[in-house]
Length: 71
Image: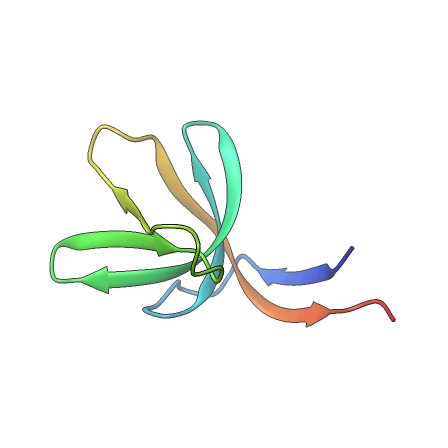
């Protein structure tokens, strides 16, 4: 039920939360760059990071700049 404000004009940098498209599906994850590797890391520690490979259709759609929580 949260509302995200996303800026598509910002350059996605290390540790930013992004909306990414992977093989046609959208996901919200923290972007991490480790050397040549790109990882999308969930905030929930129960889930593993997703390593982006060259075979994936991957695009960062935008950078999350604000989260509005309903009360």
